[in-house]
Structures are given as structure tokens and as C-alpha cells.
Length: 130
Length: 287
Image (cartoon, rainbow over all chains, first blue to last red; front, top):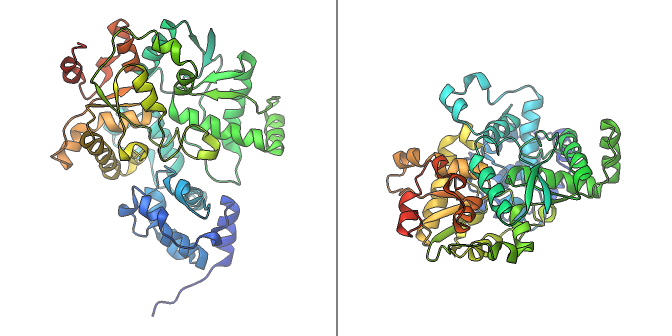
């Protein structure tokens, strides 16, 4: 059986960064049901929230979900417990990025994409991924 | 009437047809939109972390400058509208944050600016626009696409019902066309995922366009330059991954208004549309 490592400090740090009571989530799954990108995520949003509740730092940081979250706020609108999931996704992204981990390297964006890209798209991607 | 408007990074570049047609349409009803002096970037998508208030700095400075002009500022780009309105909500609600950022910038903003989207202005001044319509686009089925930024989060945006909005439908009826409401009208187009995960973004856009067509739309209208970019620019690529996709033109709402008001064609900005609207407009004898 896999040994799970609980990290209480990580939950507290994430709660502070996002100002959310993550323990409020009762796992109804509406966030995942409405998420347009859940099918691309290795762990759907509600499971990611559960991992955070359990303090499973490694599982949370390994998941690709936050990089597929487009901050469209559908889950935030529909959550019956008022948990602002996009803030938590941003918190996880920020946790990675503050550890100087780059997801998007501007030098590696193909030239044609770079030249054609809408400034808003490019700036938003750089804000979220670098 | 003169109102300042905030162009943001894209109204003179990628969203030029939105800029040109909007100014012309408002001009035709004697509302002069003039560029907010000394504006700069709003910061694009709003930062969602709560332990970093950096993202309020640019909005506060913009809002303080706008307030010197007028108590109201029109913001046509959905993303700028979202960012400025969310920032303004925090500055208005949290006097401590307002004080810190004011002191940091040497400004004295009071958190009371009113930020208006053109849709809200048109709704408030219905008759002004209705009376200016010269050619009713009867029978033109326009899918009303909202996207995310106008509507969510509900409490901060106070724009319309985030799940079942009607403001674009009302606008379409006002200019004499036929509004098409469809389930995915509030779904995300893929946003900035187009840079790093283009397949996911194109798939999201495809689902929206398919859903609009199945509900009878011949074209879509939107106010968001980012949605416009994703929905319009990538239809060719969409056909590679989704062979059943049929091209569907995407208009800015102001382009369709310019047509309804029968303004000179240079203001319609159709040359900027990547997916050609010519066939649809010919079908309805507009061209």
C-alpha cells in the first residue's frame, strides 16, 4: 500500500494565499461536473480539493489540473459551499511559480504563435504560467 | 454627451474593428467616446491570490485618472472590464487596502468610480439606439455569446445573471435581429490555454460553436476580444481536428450595430474577420 505523507503547513500556506476555508468542501462534485477542462486534468478539481484537505502536498503539486484551469469561474459560481476553487488553482500555480518553476518559457513559444497571438492571450498566459 | 473610454492594449491592435465600429455607433447617437488620457495596461487577467495586492496598483491609477475626467468610464474590452471592476470592488469594500495603495501611489482615489460596459450603457439608453436603427436585420439569427469575464464572479461584476443572462439578447432585439440563446453561451472559450494547450482551447471553442449552430445561430456576437480571437482565428485548425465543423462568422456586437445603423462600410470592419461573414450578410441582403 502507498504511504501518504500529510503536510499541515502546506494546507495552511495555501489557505492563507487564497483566503479560503478549504475544509468547507463536502465533495459534491459540481465543480468537476461543470469544468470545461476537467477531461484534460489527471486529477479533477474536486479530487484536488480533497487532496488539499488531507494535506497531500506531493499529490497536489504533481497534478496538472491547475495548468488546465482557465479561471473561467464556472465552479466558483456553482459551488454550494462558497469555495472559490479558481483561487485555490491560482494558489497552487503561484506556489509552483514562486519556487521559480517556469511552465511557459517565452523563448520556446513558436515564432508564428508569438507573432499572431493576441496581446491579452499572451499576457494572461505569461501571468499564469511564468 | 462626452464619455471617456478605456481602450486597453487591444482596441487599437487586434480588436480594431471593435474600436472603430463602437466609436462610430456611439458617435451616430451623439455620444462622443474619447480616449481616457494617460491610460495604461490594466494588468490583464485578474490575479486571484489574496496575499499579493500588486495587481490593484495599475487599476487604482487608471481609476483615479478616470475619476478626474468623469464619474463614469466606459470599458468595452471584457477582460479590462472584469479586471477594473474586480479591483474597484475590492478598493470600494476594503478601506485599508485602498489606503495602502493610495499612499503607495500618491493618489487619493475614493473607490467610487462607476465602470460601465457598452451593453449596460445601451440598456440604460435604449431608445437612443433603437431610434437610430436604419436597417432592421430581420431574420438574422445571432448567437449571443457572453463568455466568462462579463458575468463572473457574480457579486463583483453585478452585470447579469451568471447562469442565464439576457442582456445580449435584449441588445440583439433592439437592433432588429433575431437573438439565439444557447446553453453554452456562458461557457469558457479556452482563454489563455490557446498558448500552452491549444488542443484543449480549440476543443472548447468548437463545442461552443457547434452548440450555437445546433440552436439555429448563423453567426455569433461577443464583446470579448479574447473570445473573438479564439472563436474566429482558429476555425481552420478546428476543421483539422473536428472535420464536421462548419465555419460560422464571429462579430463584435458593435460591428453588427454599425450595420444596423447603416453606417459607412469602413466602420463595419469586416476585413478583419478571419471567418468570412460575407455569405451570411448576403443571405440577408445586407451586402
